[in-house]
Length: 293
Image 1 (cartoon, rainbow, N blue to C red):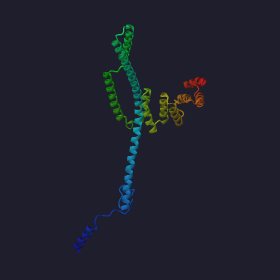
Image 2 (image 1 turned 135 degrees about the vertical axis):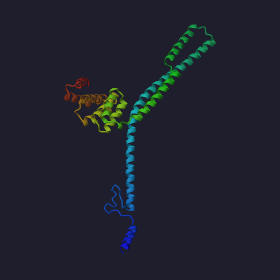
Image 3 (image 1 turned 180 degrees about the vertical axis):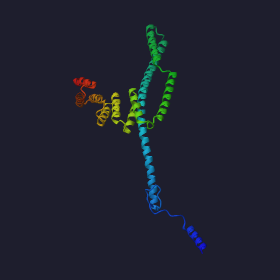
Image 4 (image 1 turned 60 degrees about the vertical axis):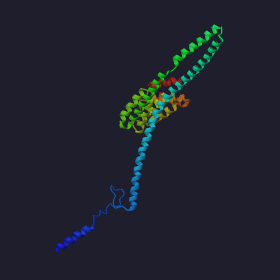
């Protein structure tokens, strides 16, 4: 009898199937490993995870877009420099075209003189002298093929070097303190394009925003972008108005206002500077500027 009961017990266990999970926590979508979900809950969980994945992808794309914008700002400064050089080169080419037309005119005159065998030797000599002077001028300014090829090679080398630099210029791998130190070094070297990118990155990371805005204002001031400079200076002062650079900030704000024609506000800033920092060098400059305003 005991043996029969044991066999029946084993059969019941075999038909009972795997052990059911506890009912506690079943259907909880917020659990690390949800179980006991209905079909609707499974769909909800699937959609929730898909949305979370999309949010992560979108955030990553937004960060990439911002990084590309910062790189474009640095590239724009370099392109502006090259555009200036290209315009100068184009002007030289136009002058060369004018010279070539002048040579054509002189050659035509020479041919006419040769055909007619003019007896006016003085006139022939004057034309030849003019031609000689023009040829000397062309020899001094003309860019021959060899030099042009060298210029083209140099440009291609620069392009490759710059593209390599852009690939390595991922600031997110560096500590903010090191980036700030490099940004000031670039500013002192007048490498304003790169310096702007570094300071803008620091502001985005909330690292020394008052000082970084001040330096961006100084860059804009030195580049003659006075309205931009005023905006950066005001932002810097609103964040922290006890910095050691405040006298310079107030002075350059006043000068910027004066140069865009806002003499009334310029006077107010000059007077504020003199009142707040009367013993500073910036105050001495402000007093002279007020006398001329």
